[in-house]
Length: 124
Image 1: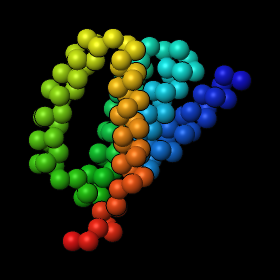
Image 2 (image 1 turned 90 degrees about the vertical axis):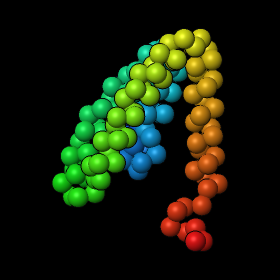
Image 3 (image 1 turned 90 degrees about the horizontal axis):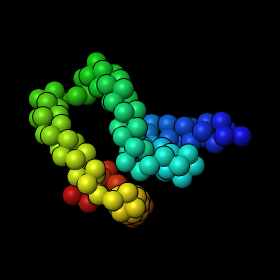
Image 4 (image 1 turned 180 degrees about the vertical axis):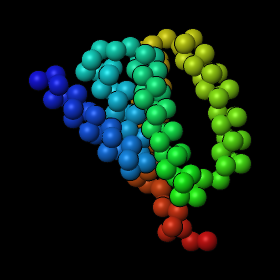
């Protein structure tokens, strides 16, 4: 039965990720609540699984001419130190609070997604 929940969590995370909504939220929630993995470790696993997805997306979209390589290089140059800083800060925060911060982030992101106006429908 555990394999069924794992399969459903993977399907949900994959579907949301494919739609650009961040399937990692489901993966972290599943790992922490269903498999009793520590919050910090769950977030690390999520980042680890994100890397191959990002590389594949970069290759596919790069071949289609949809990547602005100069901007991507600047984003990557800033993202790496920010990621390392975030890992260090997360390691300093008590696990309970890390979970609450993650939950608040998901709620704010969800409310913003539900209540925000899509870019293609904004009055400009």
